[in-house]
Length: 288
Ligand code: PAF
Image 1 (spheres, rainbow, N blue to C red):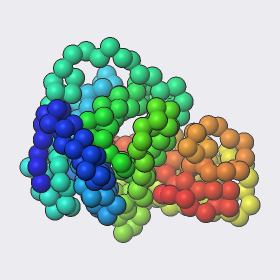
Image 2 (cartoon, protein in one colour):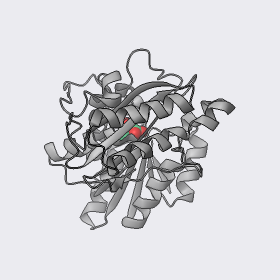
Image 3 (cartoon, rainbow, N blue to C red):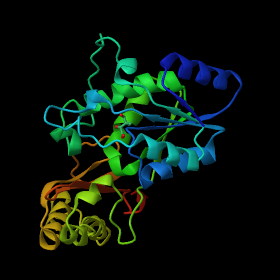
């Protein structure tokens, strides 16, 4: 496994890989790797000749008041995990390397971001696609791997790659869960003992919402209300949102006719947890 910090070196390696017909799987991360990332690395490893992992805490996707300086970092551990999961190259640039001069472009994401986390984090997805445009050009992957826990990111990145005709397949990997159904996240460590006991109610509430639809409930509002009522009854968390929208367009819907996402964010004392399920007009889970 090689660790590369220079853009030109990484780009020349990836161009050579392309010329020699190697297929490249790419897992972009901000480091502090957890089991969700490991799942992405394993999926990339299974599908490609070469796996590139990038670790870069991207300042452009943090808003004012979001704690960029305290974003957790553990490079030594990340390297160990990368090695154990068969990564060939770790691209680990500095902020200066990635943004040597102020960008002359200001990319805006005008769809798929007015709800869910995009609503409470204005500018976040513009920062995400800006850094991904650079990383895709530097690493030249055939496939890029993202977790479905952040389904809105998958929807935005998929649209962005289609809009700009990047020759890259966006691969959405299912959410990794604890035995009790709680979606794995580094934020779970910030739950109190009592909150940790309550948190699986989030996935149970999503199931209750989907079951209601499968049992004949057609009102989007009624389904959302069932999810809210369950979470409010089972946890001390404060609901940030419960949304039922089309997927991946993330538009408001009156009826469930095609793929939809039921998505939830709940704020506990020191941890904001998100989870979702994507299903189709028969209620069959597509991803989640
Ligand atoms: O999901 C993340 O960790 C980040 O948004 C990403 C895709 C690495 C871009 O900085």
